[in-house]
Length: 111
Image 1 (cartoon, rainbow, N blue to C red):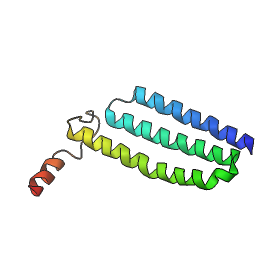
Image 2: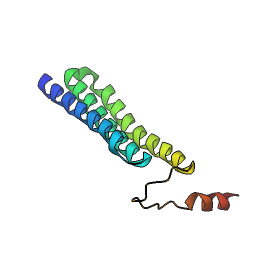
Image 3: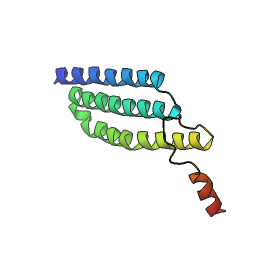
Image 4: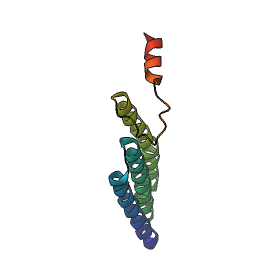
């Protein structure tokens, strides 16, 4: 069981390293956040599953943490990116801006 945990820890380190590389290489804030969020979510999953193999008694608590991370990481990332968009951080030209004018229309309807 310890070997499986070691393999999962190595995999999690690779996820974190690739996420850091994605933060450096991606062209805009949206792609960077996507790379960072996905990498940290998968890296955290691997660490938590590895800990389940090291300490089987902790498995229920670790699975609960895993579910919490699976829910909060994408929600937090999308909230931060929505705020970045509203404050004028536009996607790069190669990316289609499907939200162009959406928030202005919604704000006009609400007022």
